[in-house]
Image 1 (tube, rainbow, N blue to C red):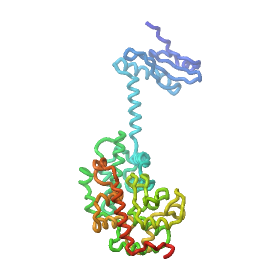
Image 2 (cartoon, rainbow, N blue to C red):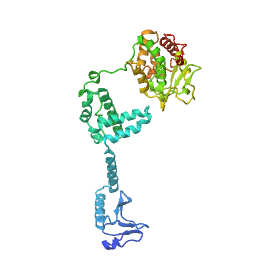
Image 3 (cartoon, rainbow, N blue to C red):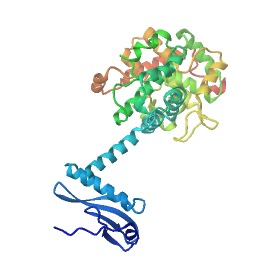
Length: 406
């Protein structure tokens, strides 16, 4: 049998300062390890399942000789019972790490969700809205709660105060909470069904949104008023008026017009190509330009291709600039509402198909299966449509009049 190490006293252990591994006795395999730098720590040599293993027991003198011997005895007892103390330690440490990782609040996970997804959003404004709605409505109730502890009752407490008075905002808050909670579940931070889901959950506690608040559509001008409106708009000076006029001619969104650059405009071929990055749909959109739209563009000051078509004082025009034009004209409509007027005109005054109309508005046509088989954008048909629209809007025969002459 191998000779047992002599059982050293605490004083003898304190005097072990030379580098090396020194057996201290008392428990088989227990030694004090001293590094070249003078650091000292306890090491226990074990045989587990036929393999020689080593296990650290802590540093000296934080762990005293008596403590080290007691720990060593406990681990040897485990081995005698058929357990692996090294594996047990690893499992305990792993569980502790997992527990710490799970100690995340709703607010911290919401921040992670925004950070992960904001690059795929259209603009910074969307991310700001996300953060603002959750901070305003969800954070006071669930912000500091562990994400795993959020329940349906908590979600109802968030939504109930605004469900009847701010229904649209409330539905967005619910949807965003649902996405954050799904995000947490996918990362193993919570289990079970999502407490913010609507069907089979919140629909039993809250009235259907459509029953408590009617959808507020964008105010639109009647088709019969459009010709007179465009005649009046044509007389107003300024880039705000010209941008609004161009938006009506093209049935484009305000942001698409305000962000338009000359590099996107092909005057020779009467074409405006809006890049995918600037489109709500995320797809490039070609807009046929009618004769009135081309004439409007030709009357604008010449500029470099990187310049904005309708520049403001300090860069891009704001959405309020176009709205201000409508207010000065005392017109009860929104910029976006002219897209609705355009759609009504197609339905009531033309024979163009729904598909052509929706393509002109850059809306998705059909379901995903249909979209997969659709390759064209009905451009030639849209050329005819936009030409008719331009002619309709210029029915008062302003073709030969420039803004400088008015």
